Structures are given as structure tokens and as C-alpha cells.
Length: 417
Ligand code: ADP
Ligand code: ASP
Ligand code: MG
Image (cartoon, rainbow, N blue to C red):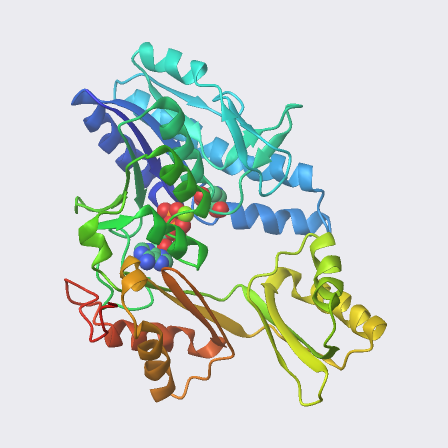
């Protein structure tokens, strides 16, 4: 008998029929003897609907009240689901984040789980019940309701699996697992049988929304085996797990893109110590996260251009801040571009193969896709390109690195000596 945490996403519980179908699936599993904690998202579209509703009554809704509102999406599904399970003759009990002991910090809208009191769930499991937990929500030290950021139900599930010492965390979604690229963007994308935490972490942070980034962090830190599966088919899914030698041979495992950033360039910055700090300090003070940064020589001697990217939602604010700084430090004009995309290739094998970046740049150049910025890490290469080319770039790179056929990553790049 195993202890299993399962999570079902919004499309899996979108309406009463689907809720009943998932309930049958879960009850079938329970009857085989497993103990089950089921984490649910809000119905598909519900969180968006609630956000829109808030904006109808307020231009800038209060962050605390927003979380109280958004948490209702998941509260609805856990109640309905528990009713459906009971209807099938099996004991179930729903729990909100508070009732499930999910403690977080107070960053409304993007709270981080700080601890989980497992006793309430354990007690209900010992009574033989299926425990149904509202995903995406927790409570802070003063009892305020908090939410974990969009897609956060994955994190609820993996964090619970870690805290409860579950044998596996199963994430059920609307695709059959983790693919070499978003299968809804490129039909040739291939499902991976396994992927390392590290690659999955990079893919999630570079735009593959199939798993919430922090869920991968929890999985990696507490060694939780994560299975990503379809709630609509019985296909085997993808296991997210520790890396091994086999995985290291794969040069490129996946390709992602992210259209959620905007670029800012401040031109003709005096090339003196302390200038970068002058530019970035007020941005960080405003709570804006900067991603890629590139500094290059400007046309004028003694001056430099600094380009960087920020989340699109903060682009306008960051532009205003940087324009003010530019005046203060006597820099040149500031240019902004919110129509960019970051395209990334990810793979453990990049650690010991050379020529991967060149192949990426060549392939994009052949399609006349211009690279505006480049950044690399040990197992990832990212390029900023024009937003309209994002999907094309995914297809081009997928073909170039032959990801359609397993074993993928079999490309003509040299093994480093
Ligand atoms: P859920 O509502 O179940 O949490 P999400 O919409 O958050 O589902 O995540 C699943 C979606 O992630 C898929 O429909 C797919 O479009 C997208 N996706 C992006 N990149 C990938 C990838 N590499 N593999 C699988 N799915 C991906
Ligand atoms: N309902 C939340 C969202 O739509 C959380 C989730 O689905 O994981 O972002
Ligand atoms: Mg999701």
C-alpha cells in the first residue's frame, strides 16, 4: 500500500462531468488499496474570471482581498469533488489550505510555503478517508489567506508529498507528460519518459508551464518522484527524477519559449564604476526582477549601452524608473520593446558537448531570426528574439536538434576532451 498525492489541473475538473470522471478514477485507485491525498485546481478559466471580476470593482484590487477571492476557485472544486467521491460510496473530506496546515509567508499572490502541519491530513487518512486539498492556497502566521502564484496547485501537491513522505506525486493534466516542446505549439514534440529535476527546473523557469517552478524546487530538494500524466488517457506519463548517466548523454532535452518579458535599453551610460548599480538599484527597490542583462560598448567612447529584460507586467514601470535614472546620470535615450520572446534550449548533455550554441544560432539565422540578446548557463542557452518568431523558432530548433526521434540529442556536436 502506497501513499500517493495526486493533483488534477483546471481542465481535469472543468465541469461536473469531469469532476465525476476524476472521482471515479480516484475511487478506483483507492479500492486498490492506496492512501490518497488529492489536490485540485479551480475549474479551468475560473481564476481568470475571478481576476476579471475584481478589476470590475477596483482598478487596483487590494492584494489581501484578491487572495481571499482567488482561493474560492479551489474551494469550490474540493467541495464538489468530495461530494462526488462520497456518492461513489467512499469517505472523502475536503480541506482548504488553512485546514490542511499549509503555512506560507505573506507575499499575497506569490506566497511561498514555509511549513506544513501534517497532523490534520494524517488523521483523516488514518480514518480511511480520501483527503481532498484545495491547491494554490495557504495561510500566513496571522491566519490570512494567501495564494502561491498562477499554476501554484502543482506546488501544493509536491510540497504535501514531501511533507507527508508520499511515495509519489502524480500531476494529472491535459497533456500526456512533459514533451520536448509544448505539444500545443509543435505537433512533432515528443513525450519524454523521464527528465531530471534540473532540466525540468530550467524548462519551468524558461516558460514550460506544465509544472509550476516551485513544485520542481520542492521535488528536487526533498527527492519527491513526480509523475506528469494525462487525466484523460492511461498513457504512462513522464517521471521527473534525479539525473543519471543516461540522461547526461542527451544534449538537448527540451525547447521552451517565454513571452512574458520586455526589454529595456539605456544608451550612452557613462562607463564608470557604480553606474550599473545606479541603474539597477531603483528597479530592485521597486520589487522588479531583472532577468537578462547585457552591457556593450556604445558608439561614443567612454559610454556603454545596457540592455536588460523585466517581466512584461512591470515593463512600463521599469521604463519610467530608468528614464528618470538616465536623466540623473546624463545617459542617452532609453528604448523599450515589450514584443520580445525568450527561446531556450535545455539539456544536461550541454555540460560536456561543445558546438550546441553555434548550432542553435545557425539554425535561427537560416530563418532570418535576429538574436537580440543571448545568455547561457551550464545546461541552457537562451536567446531573445522578436515575439512573432517564437513558435517558428521552437519548430526550427526542434527539427535542427532532431528531438522528434528518440534517442534525441544525437547531433553532430563534438564531445569535449
Ligand atoms: P493544468 O491546468 O493541468 O495545471 P497547465 O495548463 O498549467 O495545466 O499545463 C499544461 C500545459 O502546459 C499543456 O497544455 C501545454 O500546452 C503546456 N506546456 C508547455 N510546455 C510543455 C512541455 N514541454 N510539455 C508539456 N506541456 C507543456
Ligand atoms: N487556479 C490557479 C491558476 O489558475 C492555480 C492552478 O491552477 O494551479 O493559476
Ligand atoms: Mg498548471
